[in-house]
Image 1 (cartoon, helix red, strand yellow):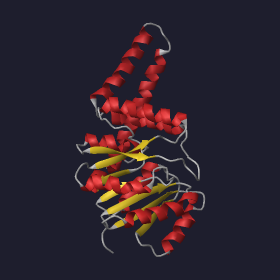
Image 2 (image 1 turned 135 degrees about the horizontal axis):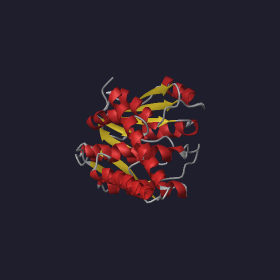
Image 3 (image 1 turned 180 degrees about the vertical axis):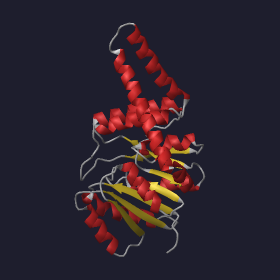
Image 4 (image 1 turned 60 degrees about the vertical axis):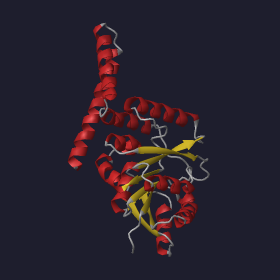
Length: 281
């Protein structure tokens, strides 16, 4: 079995309705690439028929090397990506979601940007988002905050469709805990890698349902601190929160305690992350 140049890693949870179409389209797209490819599906503890469908798929002859790994219970997208990266063999690693909202047909464009030397990591920039207003607003707020903190002019850092060189993925491995997958582009840039974006169409999810819950907003906020402290503006933001809250408490405005509590919780989350990361290393 020849070593592939491109490995497409697809994390999924309860995507039985999309797997058949997703696989057919990936096969067609990768067959058109002038390179050896493989597909790595990562089942994140699905509770529907996704595992059975994957098992049946793997029993059939495939024109493109197809492999799968199953996590025993749901661990989240970051853990699923880490598991996929661990068995992927390509020198270019591509990630895409199983919901088909970013068409698989855009993957060759991302790969070409890497092969040309334009970037070490390319993240898709979803055009005309087909999501709820709340989700679009939260995404814009998140990206605006990251642009201010990091100084990077990226518009859609949390898009699930990305392509990166293996070296980048290996150096990001230590960050693949909690829900840190959404920060991979800014972390790669902080390490000195060239990061680019590519506009891609965004379509309505036709089958299955999104599992984007309110808890993810909280996890994103908690994970932001250890990331933000890699830039001076992140330190400035946290220090301003502490200073303004302390001033409010000193001038007998009780709600200043809320700001101090938020600052301490944020700091505790950052400390917990660094401890977990050091244990992993």
